[in-house]
Image (cartoon, rainbow, N blue to C red; front, side):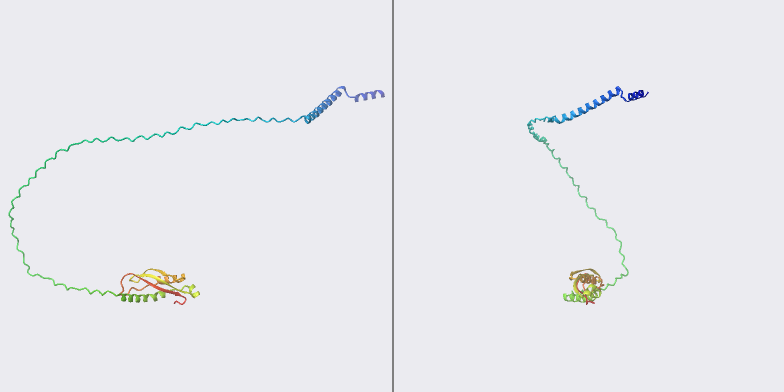
Amino acid sequence: MTTTMSSATNYSLMPEPKERHFKYAVGGAVSVEVLLVLGLVWYGHIRPPVNAVKPKEHVIAVQMVTLPQPPAKVVPKPLPKPVPPKPVVHHVTPPPPRPHPKVVIPPKPAPTPPVKTATPPTPTPKSVVTPAPKPLVTPPPAPPPMSAEQAASLMGRYVGLLRPMIQQNLHVPAELRAMGMSGKATVEFEISPTGQLLWAKIIRPSPLSAVNRAALAAVKDGGFPPFLKKMPKQNTVFQIDVEVGAGSS
């Protein structure tokens, strides 16, 4: 019994014939593939590089052709202006003048004698009252014309009235008082016979603008008296120097 069991065990461990043939076929196929890969690698190293073929260059032939010159422009000649036909003048002979009719002047009628009419008698007034004649009133004689000296004297008297009034209306600016400065400006102004101020302006200003403002304001703020009796009753222009300073009252 011992010998029989050992021989059976050895038989089971041996491979079958079909399995062995399959293993041999797979191994041969693998080795063939390895040889082909190695052959391709070796052939790639020893093969010379293939020169790249340059593309053919296309040559375009250009032919110069001269175009014919355009025909010259033909300017049409202006047509002559049509000449209007001359008007036909028909000569017509005027008819003979008609004879003027005769004017017959009738004879003058004989004058008839005028017929006299009786005029009624005019009544005589009983008493006629004649008005007393009015006494003649002679106008007063015109005053003699004023001389230049008298007019200058009246103007001087009137200007003497204006100066204190302008000085009374003068307000010295605080800036001039603080700096102890003073100045003079000439003011020109026009006054009516009633004493109304029409306009005023500075004609000779001071270098200090505060002096000019104060002098013009003093003239504009004053109510002036009417002209004197013998002064001419017309608008008059005056020029007065106004002094503005720290010492002005």
